[in-house]
Length: 308
Image (cartoon, rainbow, N blue to C red; front, side, top):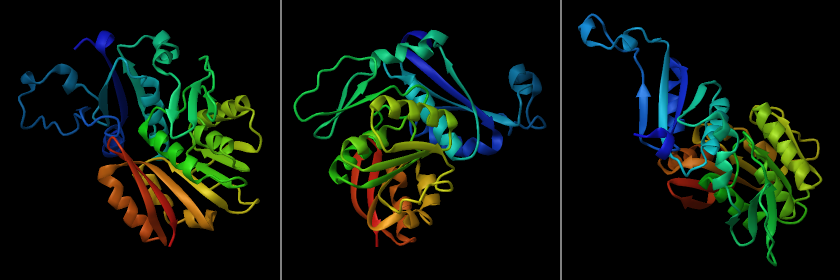
């Protein structure tokens, strides 16, 4: 396989105890994974001279998972997605992109990031692109940097479509796990009175703050928070809560999120692979919430959730 020409290999190395969670996260990008785990090699039952020396000497306390992405896909979105999801799951990993130069990291992906129409009127435009708005369009200019959230991923698109359907003038919107800040900015442009965004990753918060500033929107803020722990409730509960994260984290949030929602509020839960959807729905139902609507796209789903 010619990595440099046709493919990019994204490889993540973690401590062995986090391998299963990493596999689950990376399978959200592609189910065809390469796993390197040498911890279960039993030298007592193997002929040592038939095993590659690099395997014999490999660190048995770590494991690696690789996913191969087409060269025409902006791999920085995948890398940022993986970093954000690992942070949400409480562990770190070494991320490598094999077959891509350092210059590619910074610039080449921009060639594949073009204005994106979502729903009936939202258009996500890269900060470096020229775009002439058409009548009725709402333009959101973004520079995602190293944060997840360009609008190209199905999970983000689904939430933006739902925001377009549900945001009304004067609403208060909360975005948990905000990445680049794209959802909070979209909600504000759709008429929300105030939007508060939070992320566990300080890099994502920095990027989101820059995007918020560049958007020119007022009453949109972003701060560091571990899920809901540091969320500001001084202005009251929220009309809409966005959680574009992963199934496991939404399940963890299910017990607490209702306290941040007004009685008639909705939770927009996304980042859920379809195979885990029923598991998430059950966790929500067990905590006094009900699913009122659902959107699916290419193996992912987003849920519209209300208080029961």
